[in-house]
Image (cartoon, rainbow, N blue to C red; front, side, top):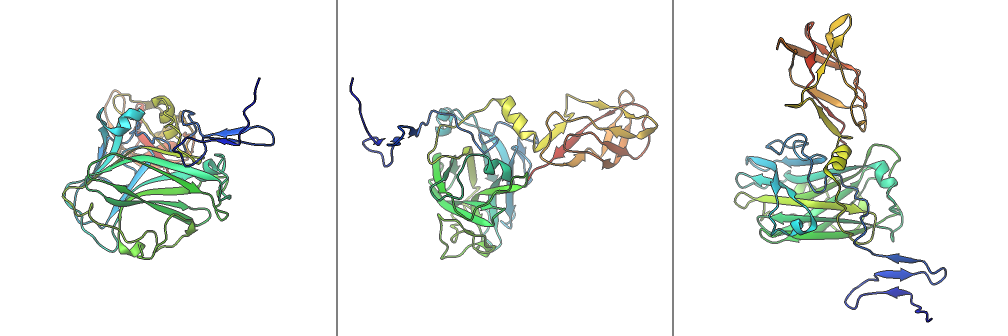
Length: 368
């Protein structure tokens, strides 16, 4: 029997080792793209849309966990929506079926205070516990995603480590109406910090445009730097924004504590939905209504059900302006929400006493 002794194995055309061997104990480290590693992005394949599959509102309005911010861009109607991939699209071959689209009804306009972003926020404790050696410059995390723009130019990604007050940004280039896979390995830094709590750890922005209030011509990219309110990016190209009815598409967003991009770790619809429900839940949407009883002795108060998944924190609660009584169909106005916790419970204070159980039509949000 013979023994092959090596320190590493690398492909003939590769720039890094596929397998590194520890010469002392014989253990090895392999870059195996077929291993389904964790993805710190929930709903990166855009399966879950509890709120709506289309909306002209900014903020959290459509795809779960994703937020848009579009300000001072003129007066175009901007629609955020779920779209279906064609079998010929690049992301489809990786198992993705949907993508998120931001579509302008007309050209945008440029202003110093313009901003146009798709945003995602990650809990601090999830980053602290993910296995990333984030204080070590040799410890890396890799972001990858598919993107397409109706008009090509250089766009940018911005990451903000909220606990430490440090940011990192990098450019990516798209050509007209072409799906492109973007992969970026980001090093750690001794100044980074992630608290062991449910607060904001990293805010990520896929930025389509930013006005000069937040850009500088001498900005340095591809490095961690102290947060600045006026120096986020180099000056932005506006080719895409001022084109006729611009669109921007994204899917397959993946953030893994590795120094390479593994295959996308697809999750079942049910698994992804449960993860999303930590941040947003809606109960009793049509046609699956839930009816809740009023309190004994306080028939102007409707008891709240326990939630199937505990929320990140005590939620912001909204409902229809009126709740409908079972059988009679009488509408009862909502005055306030009381003692509703991360696990649900509490009650809704009505404007008047009710005679029957009421249809519970309520949304709970604990987004970052």
